Length: 130
Image 1 (cartoon, rainbow, N blue to C red):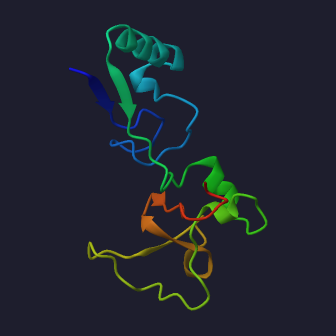
Image 2 (cartoon, rainbow, N blue to C red; image 1 turned 90 degrees about the vertical axis):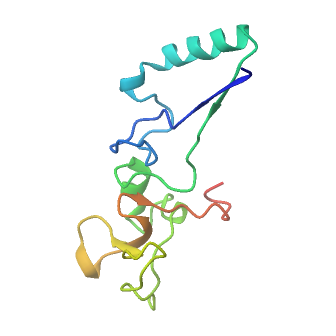
């Protein structure tokens, strides 16, 4: 064995962990950051690489960045994709679900984002996100 591939290890409100709330912490169910460091050190001592599934194309809607991004004046606003003036909010996704989701409990009049209902998309093509 030459490597260990870990699913997302960051805190997340979902069972799968793919909607991260804090990229600088370890989900407490897996231990602490110190525990993770010990795991990596022990693996490296044995010549085993550790790969983390780092989710960067979306966050949790509970992530502080997303909550701040609801304000168009926030520096985080450009980190997410938002519906434009002429976006068809009723358009469907490839999965047959609604493609756009209301943010911040503001309903139809508020901002909308694409992605899973709890995982707003981050446009990785923009310099602000990178």
